[in-house]
Amino acid sequence: MTDDDLVFKALADPTRRFLLDRLYKRDGRTLTELESVLEMTRFGVMKHLRVLEEAGLVVTRRSGREKLHFLNPVPIRLIHDRWIDKFTERRISALADLKHELEDTA
Amino acid sequence: MTAMTETRVATQVYRVYIKATPQAIWDAITRPEWTARYGYGGRAEFDLRAHGKYRHLASAEMRAGGSPEVAVDGEVIEADPPRKLVLNWRMLMDPEMAAEGFTRLTWEIEPTQGGVTKLTVTHELEGTPKLALIVGGSLEKQGAGGGWAWILSDLKTLLETGKRLD
Image (cartoon, rainbow over the protein chains, first blue to last red):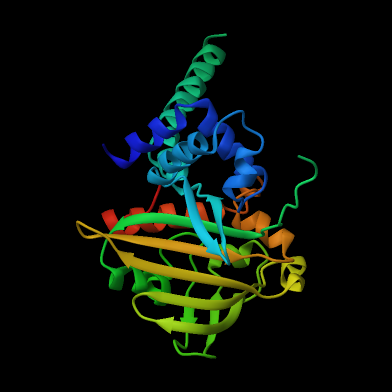
């Protein structure tokens, strides 16, 4: 699997997107904090966090005895910069062309 | 369970994997001819030893946006080429951010398999809320650039393709 595949796979799950949203709101949380709002076992949450970590979307750091989870936005940025930009640009320029054409013939 | 004690963490962590040697990445971070070519641009000047001075000169574009000559200043806390660089780091482009004072910035470079190197940026942003917004990319729509995620994406493209992002 390529890096992009891992990111898309990780994002293709509502629980994992929820975890990323939680970290976006406030970064550097422990597993205990992250599991406290989910109707899921600690083990289940750990599994989801591992998928996010393997995709590079979550990076963990030790702080004393705690393991903190940080949202790493770089993989999403890479997909944005390499993919989404490309397609949205083309679509926007196609719309701009259409607008010009319609206005010219009006 | 009632009110849980939530420790506030103002640190931001960014990680990217780049197909380049640790030395190439170290050079891209520390040498002015490289720093001018990605992210916000501008030439970085380092005295790469403990307590050595660090400053990042504003690019023409940054100066046009109102930046003073020196956009970032600071001090080297630890330089272990090509593995680790720890800096005291203060943004001077904007008076409010300059007033927030120094932050700690750590670059960590670790080789992995297949000629791919793991680069991790840790920015400790205690008491610098405005700087945290800009380096977190939250002010991109206001024209302030995409912060660390954007810088690292651009750096990866430069080192892997020799070109910048369009």
